[in-house]
Length: 102
Image 1 (cartoon, rainbow, N blue to C red):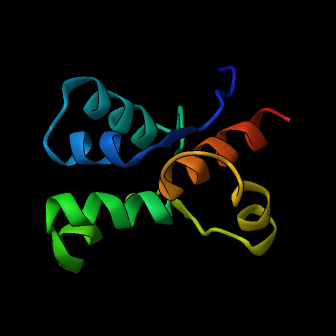
Image 2 (image 1 turned 45 degrees about the vertical axis):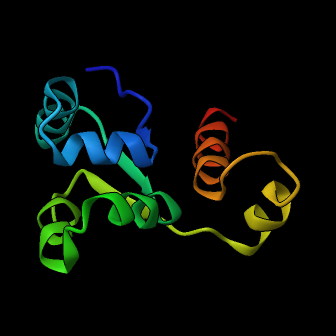
């Protein structure tokens, strides 16, 4: 099996995952099979929670899945994306996705 790059989910994708989006559910299943990892930027988690209101118990179901990892916004990343246009969580997700490709 060829390892695949992890998938970095933005806030809208996280919301869709919670709502049972078919393709994202398949990706989650593939992650459960060890084929892919899902990365959730903590800033995107915060934005998704604003829309979902899932609370800690709702998030626990997702965050306890072994293929799901959260990504904190580090100081260096915050400085780098500070001048980028757009919403903070979107900038954070883009930064993490670009870092995976380097």
